[in-house]
Amino acid sequence: MRLNTGALPSMKVLLPRLRWWACQSYEVLGPLPLLIAGLWLVLLVYLCGQLRPELYANSLRLQSVHQQLAVPLPISTPEEEHVLNALSVTEYQQVKALFAILKKHGLEARESRYQLLSDNTDAQSEQLILDIPLTGDYLRLQAALREMSGTLPLQFESLAMARTSPASTQLTMSLRVTLTGEIR
Image (cartoon, rainbow, N blue to C red; front, side, top):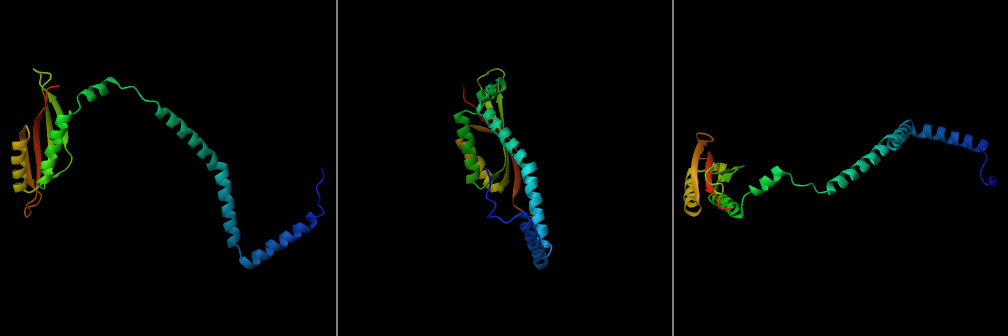
C-alpha cells in the first residue's frame, strides 16, 4: 500500500520551516521556555521509565497482601486464655460506673491500669485491681470516694496525693481500687 504524500510537504521543505520556527521562537521567548519544556520531558521519561513499573509492582504486592489478610487466622491458645480472662459484663459495668462517678465529681482520670487476680484457694473467685491516676480538688475527691464506697462493691487499697504547685489547689492523685469479681 502506498501513502499519498502529495498532500504533505516533503521533508526537504518541512525541516527548514521547523528550524526557522524554532529559532524565531527562541529569539522572541528566550531560553526559559526551552528549559521548562526540557525539564518536563525529563520528568515524563523518568515517570514512564522508572516510577510506572514500581507503581505497578506495588499495586500487585498490595493485592497479594489484601488476599492474605482476607484469610482468617485461627485463635492461638494464649489468645483463648485472654478471652476467658476478659472482663465480664458485671465487672465492665462496675468499672464504667466508677469512672462515671469520678467524672461527675469533676475529677480527671487519665489512663488506668487493670489487673485481674485470682485466689489460689478458690479458682473461681477473682478480683479486679484498678490503678487510676487522677487530677482534681481534694473536696471533690472526698465526695467521689464517699459515693463510690456507698454504691459499688470495692475496697480502697491506696491513695497517693501531691500538689502540682504550692499555690494551686489542684492535686495529682494515684488511686488503687479493688473490685470483687463475680463467680463464673
